[in-house]
Image (cartoon, rainbow, N blue to C red; front, side):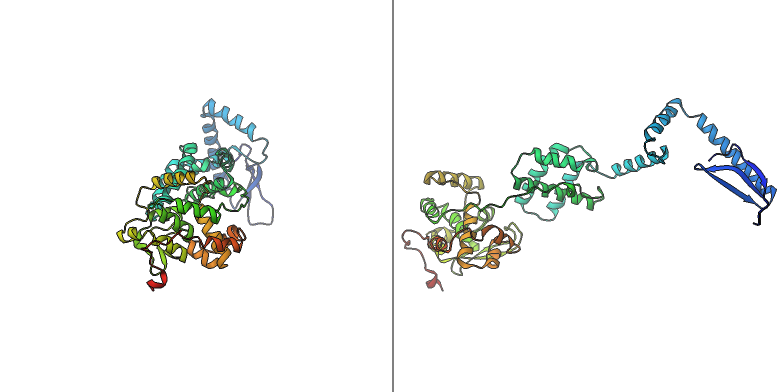
Length: 387
């Protein structure tokens, strides 16, 4: 506000005023103040002069360093007409306030994992989150999440040098983390939404031919055979196999129960025991009667034994090959995607159609579901008799 040339001038207009103040400028624009009496005009003139004097004295009392900064700031703002030092200061204060309401990445990760533990996620799911978020935390641990840009996130994802699918999985986990940050008002919007999703080229799943699977089952040791047979002919995930107990294998009633506590999706489901699977499990009747876990050893031993078995029979390990084989041959024979999706624990048949349709022929499927033990064991109870 400028007031160095203020003066009182009689007003001769048609409005109900006698005087007005001239020479007043507010934000660079001329402004007049009107009064009905000389007394009111003089009082306002004196008030404005005192105010101007005080502001001038305050400006004179500023340190030279502040004056120099003001001059430099004015130069920097010159390329943005209409913007003032006060505008810049207000903007920066708002930025600092936003930072104060944010958290460091490592703090956010700890809080997010704790919320997932409270939500009852499985130990496998939590382990996966800890692994992926651990790598994210190693890169951004002390950084305030509000300062992490989409460009930095994109560069970090690609610096992991992973396969397209693994990159997509990492992006999904970190996106969920940032979504949690938004819900806690640590961020205004999810930074991962601005990071392009890597394209994943769909490929046919790796499966075993009927001949290869027959070799695997025939060569499998007795303590490993049940898990392999259930994986091949019931399609359980490896983690579900390792949690499965004989109490949940209802041979006479022809189904396997995957409880909600042991399922990846935390949803209970029943999987039909096909006739050939019943024969393979019949070989394991002593183990069934004994009870306990279907695979009674430590999880890490399962993977070692499977690797040795594949090496012994001269076959290449297919990641999730048993489950993929089950799905592919089941769809080719039964032609019922909704039923297959239910037995595999998928929410909808979409994944079944996308990955397993037309992978194998109906003729190959007939051979697959005809894989049985070389000779029935004497303690095998046919399903017909069990009824």
